[in-house]
Length: 192
Length: 182
Image (cartoon, rainbow over all chains, first blue to last red; front, side, top):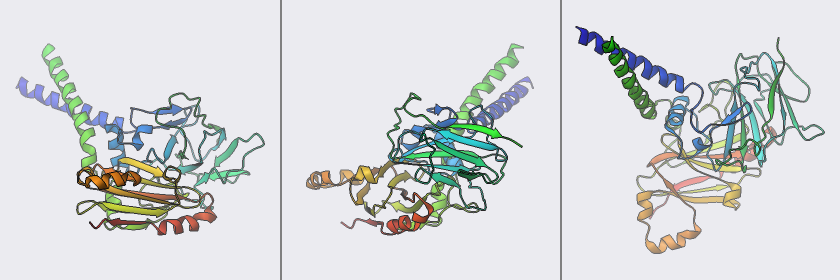
């Protein structure tokens, strides 16, 4: 009897710990090889055959096509500089310098990768469309209601992520210091 | 007391094994991965345009809306494949994926250095079969080795502004992927 209870306990612990930790590990992106600059995270090895098993599982589950390393590199931000999750009802400012690249695009998605509907049908900006300020810095207002300048509509969703993709850029998988890749800051300016 | 602790420990160890096995096995059980979704709309060894993503509908998540995209779902069972694509005005890239959506190779228009991107895709076995003299002449050709027999070639052309999307779509419409007839 004791043996049976012991076995059941072991299996119950195994199942809950094993499956629970799997789900937990797949929630925020692979724990390996993340390259973090401020609020932005990128996984350079995910675009190569060196992709680790966690990232492989994530790619299989999300159904996305990762960006190849020879194409460029993608940075994802789901929280602002202070660590608060990005909320579509607030006004958020993406400002600052961008790393060197032939082109970049900034796109807004819901956390599962769907684009958000809005009246302008605008889901992102390319580096060529952006109007820079007098110091040559970018200033994008990510907000639910119209703003002057570069306005990226959020459609009022509760949570969103920003994906900034750099195409034909010298940021390589070997980049380790944040200095070579200055990323824009993400600040909440106003919340209702 | 120790007994229960040992059972708990065994459970934790087993849990660790369960964790690793599920992580490693997940890609094999994925029925909603990008390859499966694209295979449902794309014929073998032919370039077709991918519908642009909208808020309601997108073939795969996280597509970049500033790009026109086309895909060639390849199967190298019969023979290697030859891919040619014109280069679009702003930026063009070609990314190769295995049937598990691993991007094993990508090239853009600057790395290819020409007005068209032209390359041969083959398995390692097919590459080994290339006649020796052809291998030397092939030093001029771009040969990409696919780790799997099937996979995807995704072509992407940037439209720097929405008004330039027709030019990007038109550039990709000239892309071809064809089996190389020996």
